[in-house]
Image (cartoon, rainbow, N blue to C red; front, side, top):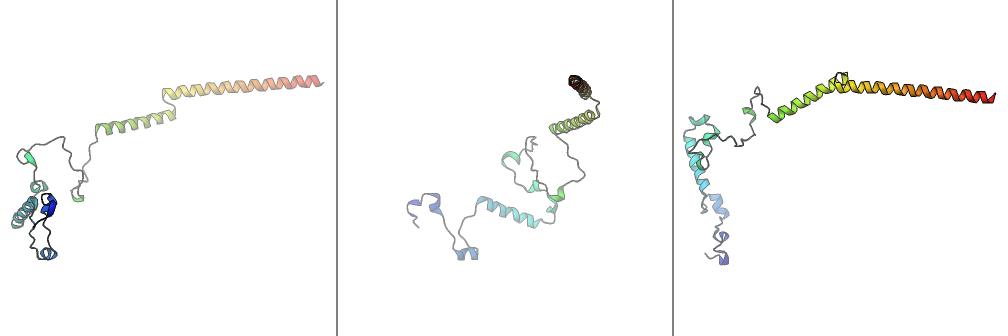
Length: 162
């Protein structure tokens, strides 16, 4: 069957199944290698279903490249973080990374320091309180001096009027 100018292209070799072939299950379409492998893998599982009921996902998963030959634990390998609800261990505590631990320690130290600061027990807060007391004293003295000067002016005005 000629396909015109596209017969050498990948689309020129396509064989489309008819609706009747699909319904009957007799398509002439070739299966891919992976589909054939999947069919072969399913057959042994059905036969030994009683024995292999407790197989782990790693045994059934296909290994790529040399992974099937050489068993190596790669420390840089990113493991999937998605877990199923039944696999979650509630009692297990997760260990924090160094950065997370340092961040938490830093926050706790800052909170402790701020508590001591409010109570006036740190050196900085003591200096601040001394400075505040000195400023209040100066302001009180300045206000007293202004009041005296104001009283002296009023006295002079009163003497001038007499």
